[in-house]
Image (cartoon, rainbow, N blue to C red; front, side, top):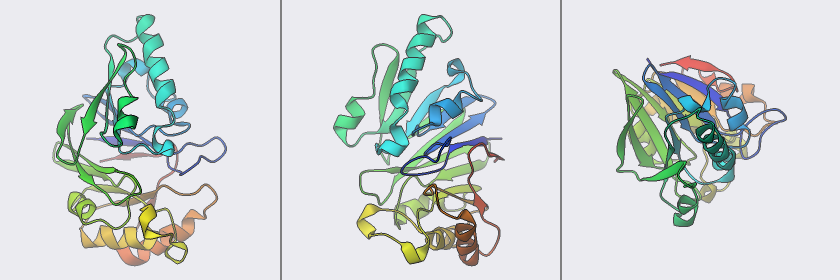
Amino acid sequence: MMKLRILGETGPFPAPGGATTGLLLSTDEGNVLIDCGSGVFSELTRHLEVKDLDAVVITHHHADHVTDIPVLRYAVMLHRMQGKRRGPLTIYANNEPEADFANLPFLEHVQASPLTSKTEITLAGMKFTFANTAHAIPCLAVSAEYKGKRFVFSGDSGPSESLEQLATGADFFLCESSWLHKDRGPAHIGHLSAKEAGEIGKRVGVKRLCLTHFYPDHDRSQFKQEAEAEFGREVLIAEQGAVYEI
């Protein structure tokens, strides 16, 4: 069984006391952090000691997905210096833009490994695969499979054939939903409306659909209603602290 904990669900800035994008995906074999936005590290340490974090996966290098990486690196360094953590931490991250990827390693304490849409890796017993999305900068959607169950996270994306292919048949699809359809922004920004998220979930046959990546002041009940009208059944709304079993 995989356990998904929502550490942060807003973008592009956090609500008071909240956090932007961050997900903790855990199995009996370990713990993987997906994205590390503003406020995520503080929320992470409510539930997990730094020594027990096995890896980090970064979908893309926008600030609301990586802002807490520097403080995470300091924590890893100090915990290793104090003997509380043994090995270095590996951050698996989108290899573009190259300058952003190059800034991730930190002394001997944090190393970086590049991700592309062709990467396949196993972390905490989970098989991770990826797909390019339609976003303002290069971004990867993430699939994690464990003991016959599959979790997919859209990352940030507008409508995308490769995202739909990755999400097809997922047991749990965490999909960004930045707008109501009537408020949809320009296509080049690369985000989905709740309506589009619902349409995708139905079209590719996901078993559970959960929306994320909201502006802090949005009425999320409207997003739920809009997505459910297309999905045809209950749609979940990500909230900081929520835990889902997959």
